Length: 329
Ligand code: HPA
Ligand code: ZN
Image 1 (tube, rainbow, N blue to C red):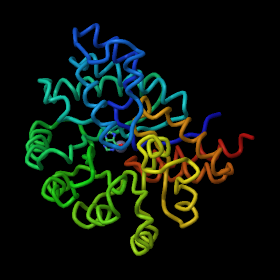
Image 2: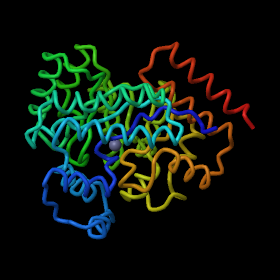
Image 3: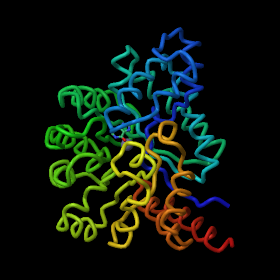
Image 4: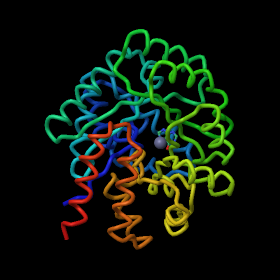
């Protein structure tokens, strides 16, 4: 039995496998600068967040129709099911797709169709979170958010992603206030490459319900105290942090310190097709590196469920599954 977990930090666009990219390029007549699998794979050596984002955004050129979104969402959920995912809160970047002439309705209806397949085939429940680019003007985010609300598109929350350094959360204060006023959940990437101060801003100015990454909180002891006291969830992505050089090696990853400090951390996969593995691979890596006991693995799983936007009865069912897992050996 796989450890039952909630996947809360996963970018749909980061699940596009190289084979799928080339398949869709052929199907949709898109010319990529790296036409063979070998040339494409040679691009996957990243020096920082931006070097990854450049490739990640370029590859999105292959996504052209609602059916493409449905197909990649279903493919992701098939793989997530194998790694023990019971609930997913899926990120997507609307700006990346509007830029290429798709409509919000095409993108969201395609993703939603895939999510429904995941529910009926594998019993994976879901929420959908639209992430705004911090490298684009806040006005762009606001315009899309107003449309999402006005046209009653089926999204459950908003997030904030893309290049972090130089784009502090304060820039998106009005966007997040508008989302909260309209009953949307709010999360933000902060403290991945950016300083602890960006985490403080995300808490105070955006009033987020979770921090995505957040590993640089350790540079500010007062912030750590606050995060522990508030039991603020931090969605940590170990393989991503190593591949984007936020840490040099897994041995230097702060997960063990974060757990020992009492921070509410959970483990996630971020962009699994780019960073060397899905949720199970992320768990395997930290279990091996930090010698995590089954009890500690269960804590990570419970934290993911607790930090999700599921209602109390749905959370209780998943906590029951974690208990069954603990008793299963
Ligand atoms: N950080 C910021 N933006 C992103 C990421 C990430 O790890 N993945 C996709 N967009
Ligand atoms: Zn991310």
